[in-house]
Image (cartoon, rainbow, N blue to C red):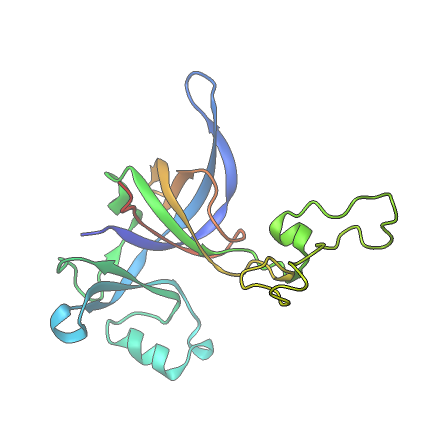
Amino acid sequence: MRVGLLGRKVGMTQIYEENGTAIPITVVECGPCTVLQVRTAERDGYHAIQLGFADKKRKSATQAERGHAKKVNAEPKRYVREIRQETPVDVTEGQTLTVEMFADIKRVDVIGTSKGRGFSGVLKRHGFKGLRATHGVKRMHRHPGSSGPSADPAHTRKGIKKPGQFGNTRVTSRNLKIVRVDLTNNLLLVKGAVPGPNGGYVTIQQTNKV
């Protein structure tokens, strides 16, 4: 079984080892999660566990969301995702999974949505240097410059870095080390940064990176 849970990013801080070395960590509120549905290859064509995290007010949930959660005697959930499995799993619908599942796991992948930064220019979006500040450059200092040849092929090639929407995309932080598992407060401390703002929902699953 590939271990996975849903959670919420709390924020970043640091802890110290016995030798005084500081370790940057991200605190993730991990579970408890309700198993809303178990996917099987015979019925659905693949194996997966559908999890729900954080109760949602019934008046804010759709009729479909209320009905789906009612099948397992649970409240509608704000964040619902599936954890793919290669083989059938020994869990039942309605079961509650906690952060204790990660007690023996060393590294995880964290999937989230990066911060949306709106329409951004090439300096912010792609790290361009910009044009020089002297020698006839007027009011063009943050412009990208040339986008390609003029006569041949006489058009901009595909893939040229341009201004546009920056952020608000699905991002996966791979192979992050688990520093500590707090069973009392349902917290998972992982080394490094994870995508998204504080309070953003994330999916944490056992890494498949060798």
